[in-house]
Picture 1 (cartoon, helix red, strand yellow):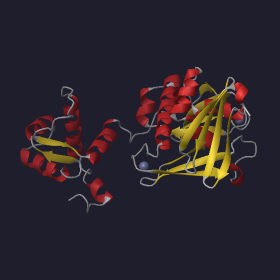
Picture 2 (picture 1 turned 120 degrees about the horizontal axis):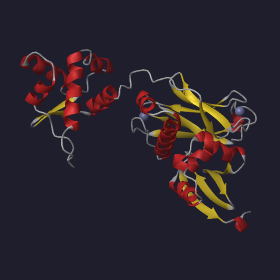
Picture 3 (picture 1 turned 135 degrees about the vertical axis):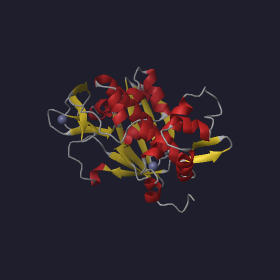
Picture 4 (picture 1 turned 90 degrees about the horizontal axis):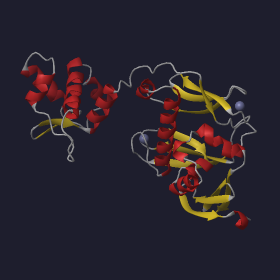
Length: 305
Ligand SMILES: [Zn+2]
Ligand SMILES: [Zn+2]
């Protein structure tokens, strides 16, 4: 079992309410265990039986047999989750298969890359988080939001959770790690002048970062690939700016005001230099053709060339 199963086989196993109930019961029972540094203890057959509404032990035995190998692992002392079980039971418990609540009209400050408007409006647009510019009516930035995320918070707290999640995930992308599946991210740097971006956008280069395994795609100005790295985060922290707590719609100000810029400084091999300027200090970040940081240097105001 296992390797010959197709995705359809794996999902067909869940088309029975009793099996979903078993997965929930195992997760709930494990959450009630005392914390331990060796993870959760397996749940015995009889402990599962006590927690589910299944008529008799032979029925439970049948369902456990179906789940074992795919969603549950049979180990000494009982059952515990496989990777697939762990993923699916969190999805079920968080009810991330439901519709998120309607969220609209959260006012937030930032900057529209297109027109410079600073009073922006955030909300969910077809379940996707969007910040829009009321002046030029264009989308300023967008990101994935989960139903659980939007149910648990509203207003500024929801915005804060989105900023933190996007910043942390974009940091992982810069390490080549997919935030969704931990597969490998492949990054391409594109020259904005060769793409069909609206004319007045102050972005010279941007990246397309795609997971080779799950095809999840991220994209952003090359300056952001540099900004979400530890040397840049530290540089800004020392100047009182929390990059990891900043929304992209807030960071757009640095691009629009010309404080962040990127240029290609070598072609063989390709090298890019991003400059992040703040209050007379400059951090230069050098990146390779996959937008990975190779080195950084700090420059004081009088040393600027
Ligand atoms: Zn605008
Ligand atoms: Zn992935």
